[in-house]
Length: 89
Image 1 (cartoon, rainbow, N blue to C red):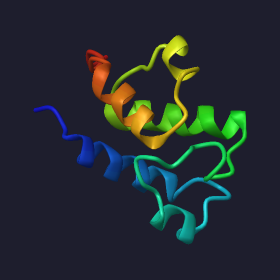
Image 2: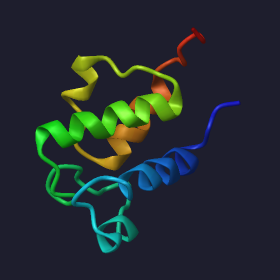
Image 3: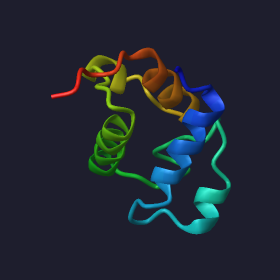
Image 4: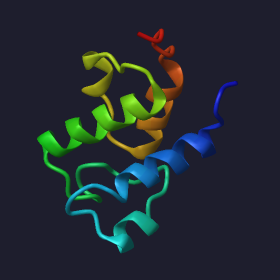
């Protein structure tokens, strides 16, 4: 079953709540238009950690060229929804 964009965003918000430096207020105000770097105050390392955690959550891998284009939560949701799931190891 393919998750809806709303479900994907809900999961993104859940993971964002666990990130160091993301306050409960920040997490509560996440929308599809939220800029991951500016609005969540994440540096490049934190963004990569965030994306890797989401890749694990969604059992997928986002290609680096796609990662470079991700700016908003909606971009991230589309990238997670567009990539096929990895085969179990």
